Image 1 (cartoon, rainbow, N blue to C red):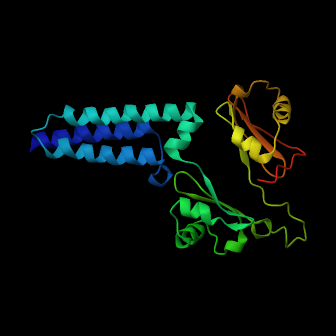
Image 2: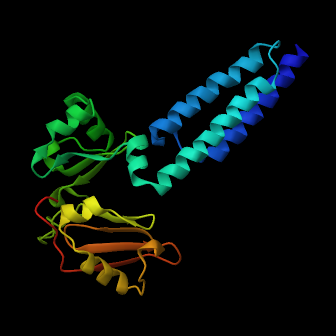
Image 3: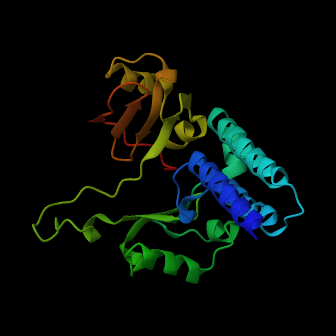
Amino acid sequence: MLNMFIRSIIVYFCVLVVVRLMGKRQIGEMQPFELAITLIIADLACIPMQEISIPLLHGIIPILTLLLLHYIICLISRKSLKARYLISGRSAVVISPKGINYKELKRLNMSFDDLIEALRGANIFCIEDVAYAIMETNGNLSVIPKALSQPATKNDLNLKPDPAALPIAIIMDGKIMTENIHMCGMSEQFLYHCLAKINIKNVRDIMYMDIDNNGKVYIQPKIGSYSTFQTEFKGGSNW
């Protein structure tokens, strides 16, 4: 009995350390591969606690192996966009100004009930109030309300609100998102013109950059504070 008690304490702290090293995420914020690894670790931890005949290391070593696997997958995801899309998938715009995107719902295996329930979770009770709804890779739904439906009462003040804006990533982890550039109709000349405004010449020095369809640019260098400024760029027709 004492042996089982001690083994349980050792395995508990081992799992606690591994989960802490994997990063601070709630279950609903995990990527699919992170959730799979977490479930397997939970199952592996039960074996050495319940079966005294199994050496303790036979439970701890597989857990540490999964931690190493987690680090390798995260490293590959950071270095390769294709691998990131393959492992974690892509965000999908399920509602746009044109309405509900049925093809994306079908691809995500979502029903209209699932979509409406997710909207209610975002405090949206009328689809008509939604400008964009984006299903993230971790299963959360991000919602951008239409300008007149946003909490700020611009309509009540008789102010003409700006159109709802959807930012699109241009640079991630020092790499140009070629597909997104083509989608919004941006030229590389304009891209480097934006970088020149903050005295940066090399794309590798940028951690993240996006631009919305109102022309507002957000740039976060790898070193230093972020910058944001307005441009005349309005994007392409496929935004």
